[in-house]
Image (cartoon, rainbow, N blue to C red; front, side, top):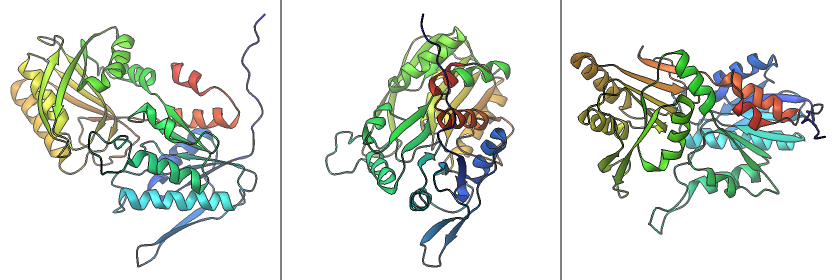
Length: 341
């Protein structure tokens, strides 16, 4: 007779702490858990230095520190926010927290996970991993990190990565919002396996674009080739990150040239840097002029409070709150990712 999996009592009293850029996300997670945020103060000096002070006793606690490294919450850079996160982690470690988990939905530097053929450059994903664990983090909870191999950049005797996959929950929400398609398309072969998971969940066809990049320039695609069939079909174009939106627009143009009908662009991390919104607004205007529909979906890993009406945000805070509770009670995170709402 096989034993049934069971959860244990909380491993330590739970404490939720946030840096300022992550406060909106953290507050939503805390509300879903019915757990208050512990008071803390983030300070910035005139010279640009910062510090974090925790205003509650966290000795012996299971501490979760939230930070949003991208988004327009303030004028701070990714690096400013990351260093403030390090200050918060060290503050918790020096306050004798028993466990420290960093919750950063978008892992900074995740696209810098290898050298891409050039020898004299760093690997930022690994650098950030080392900095977090040296500061005192025992775990980093992130959402659909760009490359699973980043988990191997952490020293398992110090910290490890908890990579949360949203596929099943996002697909269920897309269906409820009527934001799906007849065929799921990956914008490149690197995301093909994740696109296949979407296609299997939706019982849809699968296609992919093979992109040839110029790595001497950021976000430059020289040409793309379609693998599969989209003519006369509604398309769900899926990706993990939309940053400058150049690749997304190029993919949409290629799909329209190949006869695709309506297009939904769905991503996990809508970074939307520079003039990305303007680029997708032009796509939306073209769609309205030509009589087809274009919708854009992103997850709340990145906040966009002034987004247009054709942008749809999938809120993940409740899911993250459930995962935090599972970690605290030594439950199964994998089961949460598999379960439907």
